[in-house]
Image (cartoon, helix red, strand yellow):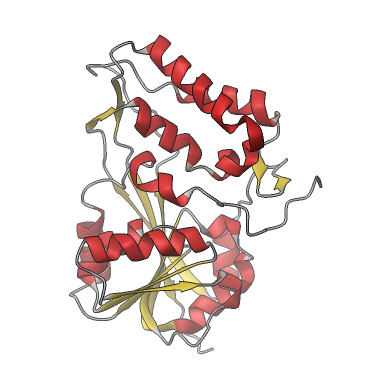
Amino acid sequence: MGAVWEWDDSLFLGTAAYYRRGRLPYAPGLADVLATVLGLDGRGRLIDVGCGPGTLALSLGHLFREVVGVDPDNGMIAEATRQAAACGMGTKARWVRARAEELPAGLGTFRVASFGQSFHWMDRGLVAATIRGMLRPGGALVRISDLKSETPSLHGLPHPPAPYAAIEELVRRYLGPVRRAGRTVLPNGTPGDEAVVLARAGFTGPHRHVVPGGQALERTPDDLVSWVFSMSYAAPHLFGERRDAFEADVRRLLQEVSPSERFSERQPSTEVFVWRKGLAEG
């Protein structure tokens, strides 16, 4: 196993089925904020790059005429297709299995390109330049993520907090101290300097917006098991024959923390960075 990370197709292998239950949604009000900031009115097209199981694209679908999700993982594309059909967007949404580096892939032009906690997995300079060329005049690149700088209050929650740190320690016991990422590891974490990359590609900005969270959420052991298996660093295949033993240890930990099998946490706020296509052509 090499010390330098390179993308491979096992990065999110087997995680798609766990996303909907395990991952928390973006903060309520995200679509309204984007509609106001970007002047969205149900027309135009959205491309969601690194779309996963369609979570972001489908939540924003009513703001556009068409949404196109792009992801290299077969499981993610299959799950997105199922979710689109379930919510009545099967004819409005299109899902393309491809790496972001393979764009434009004949997909045409777009009003908005969104990246929901996915940009750091890509060849960012190449992808930023390509996406800029796919945006219509006045278009925007939007990078969306949980607000990492906040520490939500646990005061007043009805159940014990979800023991994320303890679960991650179990992951380290099984998989080692350096975070896994596909067939290799991430010894230095994912890259930063996003602003430099996007400015160099010809984008202007960013304008930052925070959509407040803070709502009390209830979680079950099944939710939290799904959460850990939805993570690239704890994808089910990484555990090999020890997968069932790992899950049993997680469930044992959860039972010890909350015999009632109920946990509480706060809805994270959502951070949005809006970058506009620069005036220069090309």
